[in-house]
Length: 132
Image (cartoon, rainbow, N blue to C red; front, side):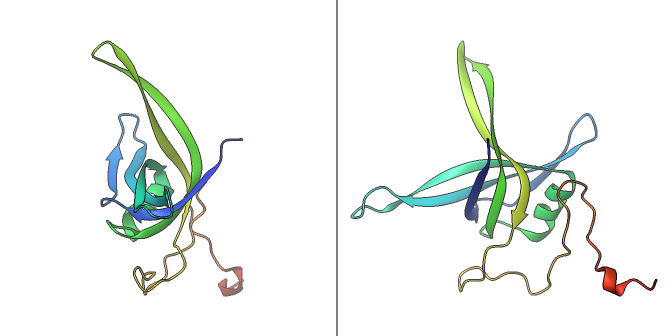
């Protein structure tokens, strides 16, 4: 099973791209810190993330450089040839994102975003508020 969840901070503002087939993709990087040894400073691992369609639009709307984020998805590799050598690149294909719990450093937005189903990109509606 290829599932990964990371919690970190965006290293740059998310960027939306429209591909030649019309699909929209949001690219962003997430830095996750780790300690190598107790006495040494923390190191940061950077994850390249790709969020598609509704999930990508959600990330672009509600997150910016420095925002805390929880990302769920799967790791994917691709190979390119550069100077006669094959280089493998890894990216996290985003399935879902969450706001991290509020902390003093990075509070969640004051206006709560609508809940979005990552698969369909559709906004969830509270059925108690329907008139019928």
